[in-house]
Length: 167
Image (cartoon, rainbow, N blue to C red; front, side, top):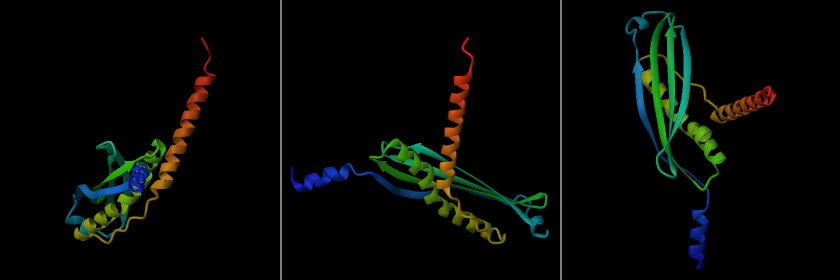
């Protein structure tokens, strides 16, 4: 085998995690109590929710969609509700199931969040509300915490099954 063919064969077996495309999938901003909300003293209460969903597209491409929803109440009234579904297509090849799970569950959302964060900030500013800077989210820590919780639940279920009386 020639050296070039050997290099190509080795490269074909190398692990791959590649961003193919990043895009906004769905965006909305609602200001249900405008213009009255602009007349009240500004004492906002923010609630930020997020989740991600992974969809397999091809054998080696996956779409990860990060949904970030920000609800801002001013007193008893909703000032705004902003939701961004920021998505990306990622290529994963020659990786273990564990590595793929981690990359899709932690790394991809970490890649997508700055885009969603900027989009939300821009939308809120365009609605003439004060500047909104969402704090960074450590999706890797959240991923590890979720995995630890799943392991504890599985261990507890196994223990309960073991402790069941045999009939």
